[in-house]
Image 1 (cartoon, helix red, strand yellow):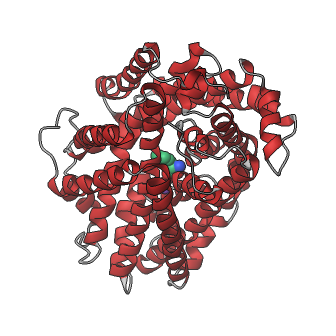
Image 2 (tube, protein in one colour):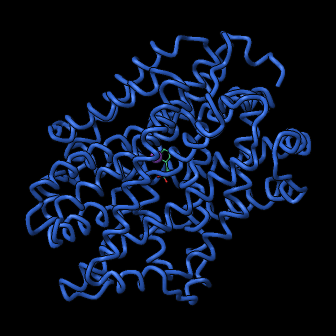
Length: 495
Ligand code: PHE
Ligand code: NA
């Protein structure tokens, strides 16, 4: 059976941008910028984008296109012993990230509806944690689900299923052709509106005024690099799978540059809305800016709801904001599922439709734990381990496998033959030496902090069982699948 293909390179670009732009662009970026010196954070952010983000994105596009395969197939075609690496990425993403990511989308759907009557009243903090999530700090409190979240979750998985079921062209490409323009309209409306609010200037000042003293703090640089990694969906196996559906003649470097620029441009632009709203709130509440910026989850689900209830026309503003998050989230969630589906189809030659139905039911079931009273705790821990250790480890090994076990200049030649912007030998240096080194430093820094004190004040037992063991289990699964024989001839075909 012929490999599926995008209808057009533009369709591919939209889908890649859809994966990259997600929940992280809207609040994670803004929050980091504020924390790390406002406008001054742009310096490490751009350095990280240029020295690691774009080079790795080119690598993932290049390898998916040249090897014509999902992550496990692409690695297997480089060196059979490294097939597991691809499986590990797609497994912890499919059975880690997408399970709780879908639940956060479900929260956003609930908050979309709640915007119409501003159900969070005058204490959004108590509303979110006590009434909506009914948070428990006992990891074993998973006996009871929160029905409103479960209902929205079912809808999220129904959409995930419907999109991925229909395949690359009629599902993912078509969905993004609808979702991405919608997202653009929504964000322009939000930014335009927010700039007219009283106090917007105060917020923008906090967002953009550079405080260069932060640049000497290594944590700022570490956060910039990990944000770039996360925001471009690198190390998930997603971009490899998406690039494997490109036609033989495809402009790799140009598409990578465009994806990176659109994604970062979106973050910067969305930050204008986020901070204008916070400035409005500080002004109308007569509070300093530092007090309205809560921790990251609080920014979207506590600070924003509060601002919305103070705002003229807040119902509509809130609805637009949460709809924006839903749209950004769905296009990312489907990309994760596709990374896994592509891998299974490549290896076992099973029918996409049956597989997607099966894993959507499985995914929905697996997500349920995150809708219980202990859901936030589970979410926080799994997210911490997957993004801090899973993604970064995959990134390091990816550079090693492609940079050292594969003739990198040959890959560069392949890319240059079909791309409009030529790639110089500097790229080899970044992939072979610089990027893995930076990622190693990040990993070491994270590990060091991990042993200093348990993350988030959770008990060691819950961190180990929910976080570390989750990651290890997917690793065992990866080896198990990699040992199974190929049921297709995909790995023998040239590329
Ligand atoms: N790039 C996404 C973001 O910034 C991260 C992501 C991608 C998460 C795909 C999950 C799946 O939010
Ligand atoms: Na998205």
